Image 1 (cartoon, rainbow, N blue to C red):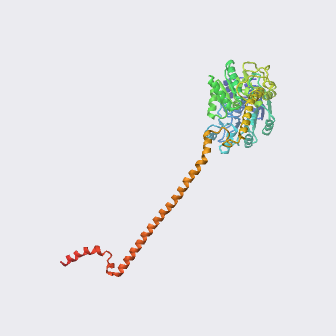
Image 2: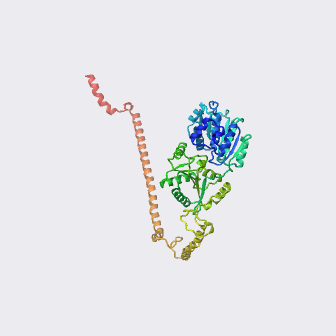
Image 3: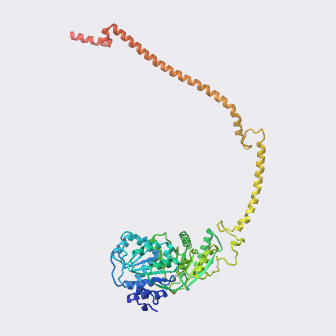
Length: 542
């Protein structure tokens, strides 16, 4: 079957042909006619089977007639991550370039002013993450009353990331009379319950068993010799990874790590050894994330070290290899990780680096995909014939990591105890000898032992002789000085008293004289003034 048989218009078919596609995938072949009929769809298919085009192509055909109003989009597509939302926007631009449709992308880490300006003009297709959509709605920059088509993509990923409450709130704001398209790579009971609440009489389309890997992907498992969680395990993994990157016929590759911290460590290690690599994780600024992703898609970067933020929906042409530096803790994530390669019928290779401690995660992956990951024997991999540390056999280890063999520690313990027996006996002997010496009566200083220096013993003996002489010399001097000060103070007081008495006696004498001679009392200074007044009288007479 060709795309012409699916009921699409000429403009859409022309854009698909220009993109290089001629035959639809199974999910596209079954979903596109149902979407064009206006029915709800519940789609479940493997990752990398073309689910994005199965709803973008018919949506472009439906939205070709009509016009959008300001702040009221006609259709809404919800995506769990920013990278996946940006990829869906690229698909709309690629397949809708012959239509005059407007589109807006609402994701975090970008300018909100530009997004509101685009909404004010009116958009036909709104692609958003749940958080930024609700933020704009609460600010009054968006209305959802005119949405007629709702697409919930990667629903299982939204469940893992905790976006389901936000999705439920968004669905409650949309009119009940609408067309809902629900797509997921896996179908756990929680997703089934959510689909029953959102969809109305849907057409269920299941291309393959949920959570299965594509046949175009060659899988391999490398078991490390080291065990535990120490740095020696990560060092061995990095060595094996570099050997695989050099040995394989590598065109481009994605390396997945469980933690953001490990993403930076692996990226710096590869860069130090001359590999053309980049890193991508959730703590990076959105502009830096988009720049790294665009370089990787354009071929400027050969290797991309990333966390699970890039595990869903990223479509990179002819991806040759995927490496799991860590075994994913969720079995579904393994399906999505290796689904980045072997897409659109191309062949791909996926290798996983694991240790004996990852046995429970490997068993969960085996139950999910229905078969074990085939183990590869090679340099750096532990063979099945080698004894594991759990069996208690000796195995040379380096460093002091947590993965150190416990059997070695058990064998070393008795040797350490034998080494410590001799110093213990010597200490006891010395202790008994000191106890006997302490009981002797002629010890000069009590409580100090026989290790007291001689100068301390000398000072202790001479101190009693010097103390009485010093005290006797100091005490009389203190007694003599005290009365001398008192006597000096008494003399000063006596002097002051005598001066005051003398003044009183002179005053008494002057008063007596004044009473005897009243004329002299009238002039206070008779002796000094009379000689000066006599010549004046003489001159007046002359």
